[in-house]
Image 1 (spheres, protein in one colour):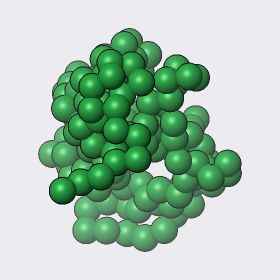
Image 2 (cartoon, rainbow, N blue to C red):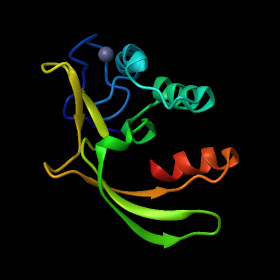
Image 3 (cartoon, rainbow, N blue to C red):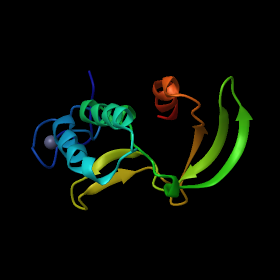
Image 4 (spheres, rainbow, N blue to C red):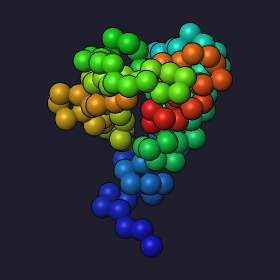
Length: 134
Ligand SMILES: [Zn+2]
């Protein structure tokens, strides 16, 4: 049996579907944000949008990160078919919806969140790349 400190969503008053996570309300928030970002690739956009709509918790959220949200990009290693970089993601990943501020709460420790980047050589890497980055 699971126990949550905050059991009910501030918005719809339904029980959270996961820790601090209301899938129904968060899906709507993501949907409202669809017009605010694009990878300029329909396939990738659709892939990310579906992951956002179906996210049952914060670990399942995928996001498109614009290049200007990354800093300290440094070469790290060479993988089989791609190069690997370390970087700092200024915003950091989403962990819950902030009802009072009407924005996502994000892990960023004030200075950013360290991530690993892999370069893409062809489109068949797309799924692997995104799953690796989450
Ligand atoms: Zn809700």
